[in-house]
Structure formats: C-alpha cells, structure tokens
Length: 163
Ligand SMILES: [Zn+2]
Image (cartoon, rainbow, N blue to C red):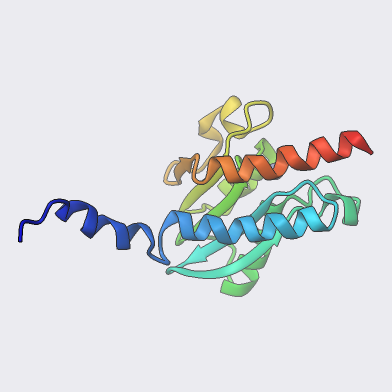
C-alpha cells in the first residue's frame, strides 16, 4: 500500500513528545492557572534541566506584596536551590508571558541557557528594550502556545475590570 503522508506520521509523535516546548509550556500554564485561582495576574513559569522540571512557580506579587515576586524570579531561586549553584546555563525557563526587563536582567545574571515564552508583551516585555539585556548565549523562543497563555491573562483583566 502506498504511504501518503510518511512525513506526517513521523512528525506527529515528536510534536507530542514530553520533551517538546508545547509540553513544557503546558506545565507553565498549569502554574499560571494556580496564580489565576489565587487572584494573582496569571503568569506561570517552570525551569527544565536535562529534560526534567526542577522548579515551578507563579506570580506572587499580590500575596507577598512584593513587585519583584514575578514567576521567573522565584523560579530562578528555586532552580538554583535545587542545583546547589547559582548558574543556570544548562537550564531552560518556560514562562507564559514574555519576561519583563527585571526578570530578563535576573535571567542574564543566572546565565540561563534558554528562555521559551508564550504570549508577547508589547508593553513591558524585555524585547521592547534591548535584546542585549540577556546573556549572549541564551537562546530565546517566543510565541509557544501564545493564544492559551494570553487568553488567561486577558480573561483575568476583564474580570478585574468588572469588580
Ligand atoms: Zn518580570
């Protein structure tokens, strides 16, 4: 029998791999949902090292009354604690929203290996300023599960306006 879509048959399992960006962004989205349920701006982050999740966090700025308690900042601290070292050059951060300048600066200090983000932040994202803020070796990917990531944030702010 003729194989009509040999390529599709090969690609599909790869797309669904537990090591894909989609898979890990889904995990970051689960953290964002926890933030949403806690009444925080719903942004979630995870850090992956050797294909394992070593840190999970979400935005905690309301509960801690701390403008620096972004999901990324806490994930950096948790990952460094887990690894017993401050540099995260072997790690990839997955975060549902493009990091702000503060978080990009912290990720630069941590020498993070990669950043994968979901929704773009055209107002306060680090790319509105200068990409050089990151460590030169950091690989950046944006727009992974963008719609799901931004929908949650839009939903949150729409509900806040109604209060
Ligand atoms: Zn931030």
